[in-house]
Image 1 (cartoon, helix red, strand yellow):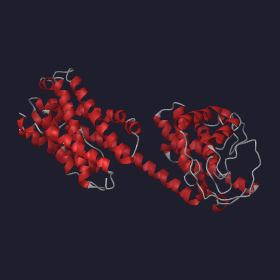
Image 2 (tube, helix red, strand yellow; image 1 turned 90 degrees about the horizontal axis):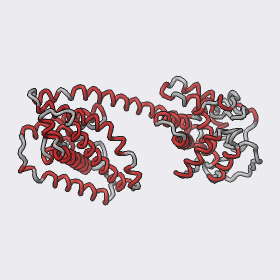
Image 3 (cartoon, helix red, strand yellow; image 1 turned 90 degrees about the vertical axis):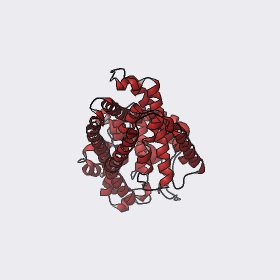
Length: 435
């Protein structure tokens, strides 16, 4: 937050003031102070481990505090862990103050809701399943406060529209925080049981193991993303004329997949397919990729090998799934005149039909060394004209609907070059063999 705008800094100050207001009644609260000291220390220790080993935040102790302590005392629990956490970049104390205020407000709200619904008595009496009701309400309150504050700081610091800043935040965070809430409830019930706080601490062991597994998944996912970035950067370095093309084809492929109602995991795979569709260019001579003007028939045949080169490069990468078929078949045509195998209609994998439309659309709306970009409306008309022969009409219609709702901002992917070459009208979409 080194370059945090003044309005965002003011927002942080307001959050800190709100957290201090929640702590004002603390001297009058009747609660065992040893618990108020133990829980913050426990949270600070868990947070250090979570940040260093798991790259995440550990909420069970905070939610257990909301179930065990009065609201002002519960709001104290996140402060040491947040105020003395390690900050790698930006203004350390601004970031720490923001995190401490955000968590204090969230825990305070969760504790208020829990106590207002009689949750404290339910925890003390181990009254199940009724104890789940106030606990669930407290988790919802905690999640709402965190996501509302996160959306606000994102809107102010990054100039993101409020609706976009908050979109999906609550639903994405609800499931993991809900799991942490169940662990926090187990801690609170055991804490109040005859076995005492020592038994409550045992809950952290299986929770830590599950959190470690979750962190491993995210680390593996990050490794996948790094692999893809490295491949795309290699293509961009080799073929400077189409720099950025791969990412835009990935975006357009994702838009089509979402419009078709595909689930999130498949949408992600199709984004990978779009990003990697031209990775086979690494096997094509650079002079052909950077040639100004039309290609000779021999040169075209060499470039037409790039889908097979690409498939050879990625076929051993298991997480890509059906994206590998898209890399191999994205230049096939419904009428069977495409390459490399001349597949017909439904013989072409669905992922390849999606990427073919996304690839052609971005190629037409981007300026290359050998021709200027076409307007989006003209590109869509051309896609519609070739639907049924070159492209799958279902994919074309999906792209048209998605663009009508979200719009498109084509970027120039090469230097604007004045060219005297005039391409004659063609019965097929001229997407640029090199893109």
